[in-house]
Length: 226
Image (cartoon, rainbow, N blue to C red; front, side, top):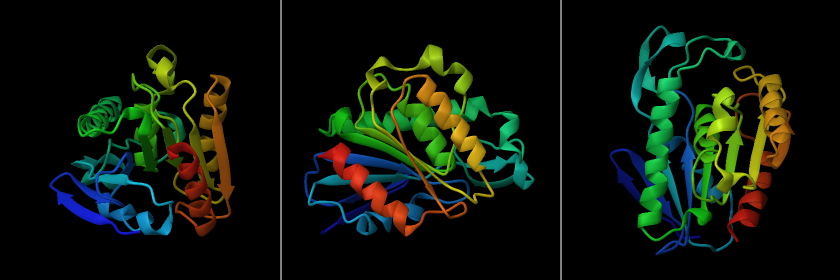
């Protein structure tokens, strides 16, 4: 696979072939940036399909649980115990709006939303779910790694009918010490009860990505993009 890379102020773009027909918008986790998942383009070993991978950088902001230290984050984390559900709704919705803008940018460049996957790890995965489940046009799929469903109390009234049947891949580490497996499992159960189709994977790992997971992601992406 020959890839071309372009760096913009707010994102990194990699095209696996000229004039790509599909796109994957991949969101990093707390404290990282768009470079974090750039190596995954080669590691996934996808078929020779023209894909534009977009790796946006989250904005810089103070993060409460880190003593107000300024870092890249899609929203503030107010408490170390994520299960308390004290959420930065304003920050989540601001990031949702930004990712919707990235989808619209790809559509304007000639890639229909039905050929766009939203993907993310940890905080990025939360924003992928937040955005994708509410996006008004059909998406190809949602990929949520080591994460949970934010603002679930508003989903019933805000969910998009266009993405009720969109494939969702969720994966988590059994030993995750950042986002507990129980929290991800509860998010999965909530979505399944609401009628969403979840492909669930669990791996013997912590808060990271493993080789077996990459193999499963590759197979899933191939299925939803082809």
